[in-house]
Length: 433
Ligand SMILES: [Zn+2]
Image (cartoon, rainbow, N blue to C red; front, side, top):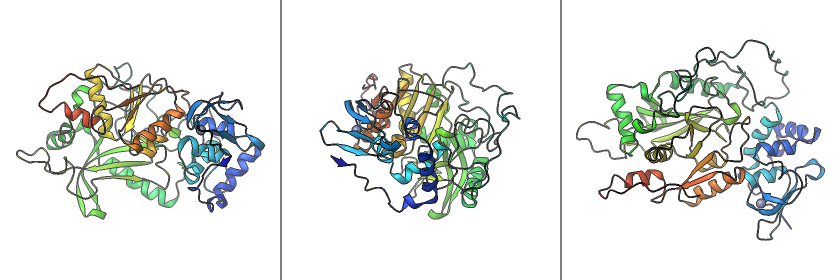
C-alpha cells in the first residue's frame, strides 16, 4: 500500500494558527464525516462499507474507515494500487484541493473563526429584525418563466440591501463579513465602487448597449433568445497595471457557503473584468482581438482576499433557490453559447453558473441547503485534458450529473459559431451522457 502523494501540501502550513484551531475542532468531536459530507460524500460512502469512491468512482474500490476519528480511507483506484490517508488526503482525492485550499473551507464548515480567539460574535436573536432583503417586494422573477425575464437577480443594483451578516447563516465563513481585515476591506470597497459605477447590461442604451451586445453578437450569442444574464457594464474602468482604461464587462463571484442571497447581502468575493474593444460596433470597424480590448490581458479576475475565489462562481441566471435544472460550465461565453443552442431546442434551465477556471469548476458545489446527487445538475465540458479532468472530479461528487460536450472545437462557443458558417445544418443534440 502507498500513502497518497501529497506533494502539493506545504508542510509548514500545519503549524499555522488556523490549522491549530481546525485541528482542535476536529479532535474535540468526530467531525470528519460531517466535513466530508460537505465535499459531496454520501451516507453510503461514509458508512465504512466498500462502495464507489467519491474521488475516482468505480463500484466498490473505496472504504472510509475513519480510524481514530482522523477521516482515514483506502481506495484501490480500480487498478489495485492502494491509496490511503486521512481526511485531508481524502479531500484532495475528491476535489484536487491541496491542504492550503482546503483548510479555510474546512474551517468554515467547522465554524472556526479565522481571526484568532476574538470574542465570539453576539448571537443573533432568531426573532430579531429580518434581513433587509426583498421579502417586501417579491422577486421580479417570481412566477416567471425560467430565464425568459430580464431580472436574473432580485433587487436592482448589485449588492442591493447589503447588510453584512443579515439573514440566515448556513455555517460560519472564513471570510468574516462582519469585520473584514484591513486589506480585504480595502479590496472589497474597490469592488463595491466598481459595482456602483456599473450598470446591468439590460439597462444600457445607445452606444454602450451596442458595445456590450456587439461583443456577444460577435460570438453568436443572442439575449433575445436566452434572456439577460447578470452581467454588468462599466463605461470606463481603469487598469493601472496595463496603463489602460475603457469599457468593460463584469461578472460578480459569490460562494455557495454565502447562499442564499449572497448578492443581496453583498457577499461578493470577487469579479471578472473583461475590457472591450472601445471601437466595437462602429461602422466599418474590424475587431482585431475578437471584440476584446487590444491589451495583453483583456480578461482579469479580482478577489477580495487570498483563497476567496475557491469554490466561487458567477451566477448568470437564477430564478429558483432550488433549481430544477442547474447548469454549470467554464467561461461565461461557453455557458451562454450552450444556452443559445439549448434555447433552439426549447430547453430553458432555471439556474446557470459560470466558473472562471477548471479549478473552480472542479470545486463547484450546490449551496449547503441543497442536497443533490447531481440529478438536476448539467455540466458543460471543454474538450481538453484539464476540462475533462475537472468534470470528472465534479461528477465524482455529483455522480448523477449530466455531461455535455461540444461536438465541434474546444467548447460550445466553437460549436455555436460553426452554425454561422455558410453550410446550414440543424442543431444536433449537445447532450453526451
Ligand atoms: Zn479513489
